[in-house]
Amino acid sequence: MTKKGYIKKIREYESDVVFDDGTEILIDDILYVENDLFNDIE
Image (cartoon, rainbow, N blue to C red):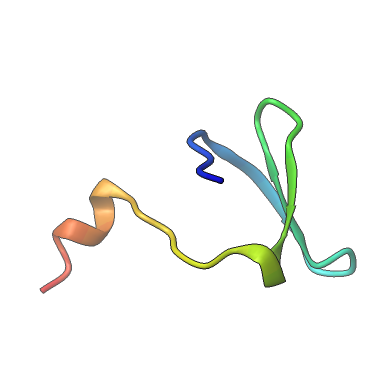
């Protein structure tokens, strides 16, 4: 599964990430994060 969107918050107690559309994904289920900001770090 691929999810694109804006992260609204990271909930430490629940160990998940909440997106602006309400989607919740467990941190343990995240394999890869891509962001344009990461392209400038080198």
